[in-house]
Amino acid sequence: MDSVPKENNMESPMELLRDDFESSEQEIRIKALKRMNLVAEVIGKEETRNNLLPFLLAIEQDDDEILFAIATQLESFVPLIGGPDHASLLMPILENLARVDETVVREAAITSICSILTQT
Image (tube, rainbow, N blue to C red; front, side, top):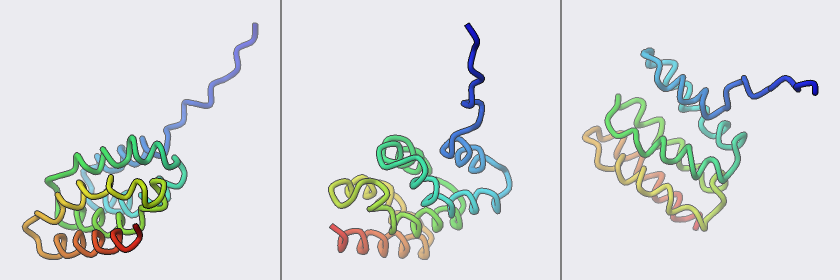
């Protein structure tokens, strides 16, 4: 029986995001986070809820620019996670970001929270 070559040798978009985020270069990490919306679109709503959001929730202590990028990107995530019924899944991440010492990160998190609440 002939074996079909596996095309699964390619990394998934989520794996690529994780790999880029683990880079020691901050610029690569920020660019990766700015592509979160695209990654969420490609991997789908369920995988975004099950994999991407827990990944983001685990990022608690990091550079302020990284945290700011997360806070600003999440504002547009409601449709990417399945709509208003799932919007509450974004809140733990944004609540963590709203507790950060840096004012711009807190303000971005609060802005995203307010925007998400108007979408529900």
